[in-house]
Structure formats: structure tokens, C-alpha cells
Length: 315
Image 1 (cartoon, rainbow, N blue to C red):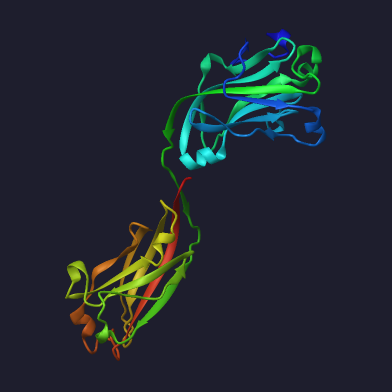
Image 2: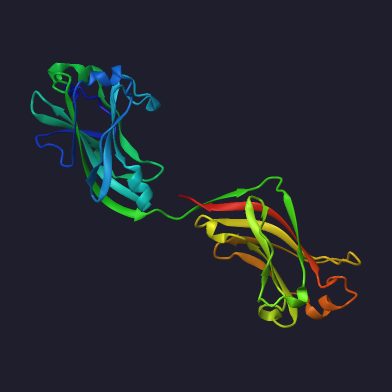
């Protein structure tokens, strides 16, 4: 159809339609003023088709990012609000229209053989970089631009849809810094809660706390001290986030400097917010007068935390 002013392009089907576009029509008056006012890209209002919201996108002097010189570029776009809200991939067949005002019919461009296009967060637009040469468009005898007015249109047919697969982004930390926090637990013999928390402290852009079960937890209940490292505010983590940390928990020997410790590595998350030992130290050993762990009814607990990596869900 070279006589219509459209270039022959592989993979693109051109046809004529007597019927107007089903879903949306965009009428532009004083078309040349778009360029004079430096409007390189124009987005239409939203319209609905197949249960989703779309818009037409017109580049009156061609999409420079696609090196589409001396052409009008025309695209169909899934609105960003739709894609973000639903988190779905949408497969659609579409046709883009241009009114021939002399013949009162429409020139239609679409992908050959009704090819489906996949719209999603990383690819919201599909269409034609070289929709029509500007020379042919501006020639009034072709009927596309008459009295500075033109009409574009769109039809969209959603073929299928599916929720995008889940994913995550893992960032490992080079030269990770180790943070230390010492917690002085006073009046140990008077602790009557199931567990006691240290104040929150920062390590690797996260807030942490030490959890002490003075009479044990789980397998250590009644026989051992139980000691854990925990996220101080796990609800603040974005959904799907995980934090990989190396950590050491110590009960300091205040007399002989023979500290008692445990080391571990763990992925912390909102659903798995603490890690440690239910049988960290036997109460018999801890309470021995000459052990140095409990002095003047006080003990010192140290946490050493190194955040090595953070995983976040892809949006």
C-alpha cells in the first residue's frame, strides 16, 4: 500500500477499515502547534479495553529514542497505575488507526498475523516507531492532516493475562562492617518475665535487639539460659525482604575474660525474625559464684553483628 503514504515494513500489516476504531479516538487540532510548543510526546487520556486502562502515545516528530526521524511514532500504552496495582502481565492484540478524511475511512496498522504483545511493568508501550512518514502525513491530498486536524484511534483485544512471577533482588555487601553492642542486665535474680529485650541498636542499616530468656526456652526451659538475636522492628521490612547476617552472642566473663559465646549465620525476615540458642548456657554453670558471668547480680551480654546481604522482592 505504498500509495497510501505508508512505507513497507516487515512484520507489519496495513489495511483499510470503513468502521471507526472500537475503543478510542484521539482528535488533534492545530497539530503543528505541538512541535512549535516543544511537545515531543503526547499522551492521551485513559480508556478501558479488556478490563484494563490504556492510552495512546503520539510522537509528532518521531521517537528520537528509536531514531524514528521524519516520521510520526504511535504507540499503545498500558497505564502505569494499572500495571502497578494489579501486578499482571497482559497479552493483547491491537490495531492503531489514522483517519483518511478525504475518503472517510481509516488506515490501520497492526502486527502481522495478529501477533500478541506482552505488556508489563518493564514494557508498558508497544506500537510503531515509523507509523507514517511526515511528508505523506502533511500532504493534505492524502487526507490525514486536513485544516491542521487529524484523528488517530485504537482497538485493543486482551488475549490472556497472568500474574507476574515472583522474584527478588539480592545485594551482597562488600567490606561489610561489624557492629558491637553490650547490654548490662542488672538485678538478674529479680527478672520475672519470660524474656527480656535489650534496647534496640543499629547494625547494617537495620535495628536489632538481644533477647534473653533467664529461665530458658523450649529445650532449655528450666535448665539453661536461652539467648537470641532478633530484628527489633520486623514489621517495618518490605514484604519479601530478607537480611543475611553473621552474628556472635557472648556472655562476658567479668573476672577471667573467658567469655562464653555462640556464632551463627542466618537469613532474618518478618516471618523468621530471631535466631539463637535455647540451650546457650546451663544455669548451673552461669550461677557458679566464681564463674565470672554473674557479678553483683548483673551480667554483660554482647552482640556482634555483620550484615552481609539484603534480598528484596522485585516490584
